Amino acid sequence: MSYVVPRIALTHPSFHFCVSHFTSMAKTFKYIIVGGGVAAGYAAREFAKQGVKPGELAIISKEAVAPYERPALSKAYLFPESPARLPGFHVCVGSGGERLLPEWYPEKGIELILSTEIVKADLAAKSLISAAGETFSYETLIIATGSTVIRLTDFGVEGADAKNIFYLREVDDADKLYEAIKAKKNGKAVVVGGGYIGLELSAVLKLNNIDVTMVYPEPWCMPRLFTADIAAFYEGYYANKGINIIKGTVAVGFTSNSDGEVKEVKLKDGRVLEADIVVVGVGGRPQTALFKGQVEEDKGGIKTDSFFKTNLSDVYAVGDVATFPLKLYGELRRVEHVDHSRKSAEQAVKAIKAAEDGKTVEEYDYLPYFYSRAFDLSWQFYGDNVGDTVLFGDNEPASPKPKFGTYWIKDGKVVGAFLENGTPEENSAIAKVARVQPPVADVDQLAKEGLSFASKI
Image (cartoon, rainbow, N blue to C red; front, side, top):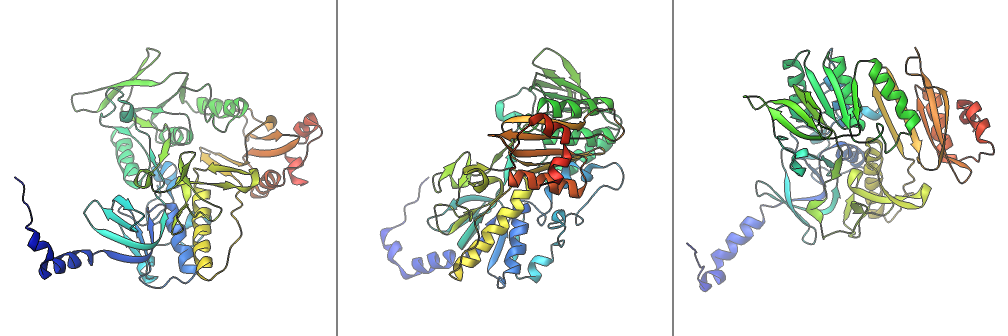
């Protein structure tokens, strides 16, 4: 049944009253950050430093909690003893800063709008609409929507919707996984994926006395960063901890028990693995769908300048979603890492506030940085992993205190450096090498010098 509004009603004064009444219900802010992850928290802290006025800034997050340090979810949050819990790891403790508890935001006059998913963005009209139908208007928008996990159900993998198949992105995901670990004491877990999530969660599952099998299609773990030599150490170390590693194949299906819980993982090579828990870590994708066709994109992200401004002067993008000029290498890059999320957010806010005062800030000059911790291991990487490589140090998995590293050499210069088990001073030294890019005359000599080469720069 359709209903046609009589033409006369459209010109009636009461009609205009209704329209203006409903449109006035839109919440208006000078600044809106959409997304409530790490970048949003660090942006909020920078706004507070810059003297944002009460009522000017809102953070809209689909999560139910204030911004927190996401890396904790794959590490201390799942520890069998004294696991990390909120409010312990709200931003900005991950970088040694003040912990911003939920009450910090209203104290600073910042509106924290939680459990609110934005489903439509109209950048021309400067408005956002939530799933509940609320409208939010802004003068300046910061897109900090981060990434979402790639799910096996996206590819129609048979049985991938079974219970106890987990993905890890938000604190809710970690809670569900933690409950399953406790419920399936001494059970079997299959970890699908050999990247960050796969390696960190395999370690933490093992700490919980779960029988762990890792499955990934690549010839070695962390192939986007690790060389075969680096990976051989971690694979050997994990094997010595009792973790089974199956390479060169993928999960193609799952079977369930009568309760709908996962029971088996079917591999492409024909093997079938028993599983009480499955954890999938096969990558993420930036959440840019809301803004498609409204801002320029490049390399899978939203294209920005060195101040994280998009092609629209009132829209900025930070963290995982931003494709920005990486000054050190003279090219556009998109970086998915917490360090960049923090620093890009701060840079965008500094640029926004400077522009209001008719000033400018320095261009973003980022040194790529990645790190991970698992078991008693801790590695850091700085720079670019391109060119030839030189391995140095003790990379024997059975060593009581293994310590080794790798340099990447391109066009006769060191452009990247990796170090396992470095001290803070040693990690600073390899970071400096990656930034300075010193020339290398003799590769064999570099291998012999190892870490001492970095300490001389």
